[in-house]
Image (tube, rainbow over the protein chains, first blue to last red):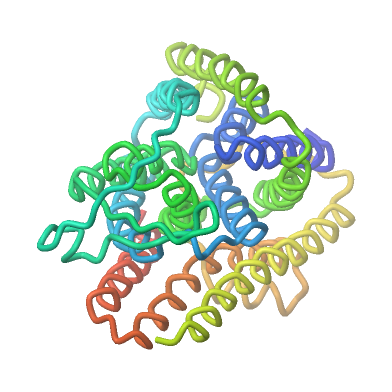
Length: 285
Length: 125
């Protein structure tokens, strides 16, 4: 393919990915990997590497666009980052060092997309857990206050080790597939640790960038970040997420999320089919 | 730690993210434009990328930057984006040091150590 056409197709794809990512809060990674592998014939490892870079772009871009550091719980985020970064490294090691067959990665990608579509369509619980002295939440300082309806509300967390385990899984999937894994992070904090919805969403966003940094450094050091692929992805995703966060205020998010769930479902079937047919290993040798 | 210092650190974190993202964006965009201008007729076959590429090398990047190589400029932009979240952890560590929160100074250092280890793991493939 001509170098300029390749850059332009990728640039517009990345703008779309960043735009959708910012609107739905799901990140652009789930669009970038299918586009690069099945759309443009980029080998899986290189696609995952480029996608992780885009995840850092959206996470940092969104976090700086609406920094709500008063809501983000830095301690909970930092503690759980031990789990996500370890998981992310394991995921990247499986791809690069263990050389997991790329068709299997494609199938896992499709399965994760289905789980993402189901989880993001569910209604989010909003908990306020009481502080229990002597609990792990107390010992590890996993509690806080946040502004809600004009007053400071306090909360604490439960099932610290359950949440920690799901976070390790979220990090693992991020490093393996090049996605942000935000849906799994929110699941761990909402449903298992029973944190308030606002706190879990903003804290998850804070964690996605750090998690993706841990695994993308492995891909970068290993030479899998190719400048001519990474550049259109970085530029497009940052632009797209900026546009997305600007129009977010004027748009029916519920409708959009439903449309996106359908798109994700179709993408999931497409990835699983191509993995099963061995198309990821045929295209890239 | 006073409420003011806490606000200052949060502002520092927010600004770092913003500056990091836009600096990376600008450098990457300049690199891509130079690259495309110099390779307008070139072909790119993604399928021919090697199964096991050569490791990234800092000295090669430095050399490329001094000679104005477009791909090295892009690599620098990407590197800045990669470092941005790491800086965020370092600033958090600084905040915990101001708070004298030893538990979270330790936890931040563990996270930084895990991230640092990925540099070495990546180069062993």
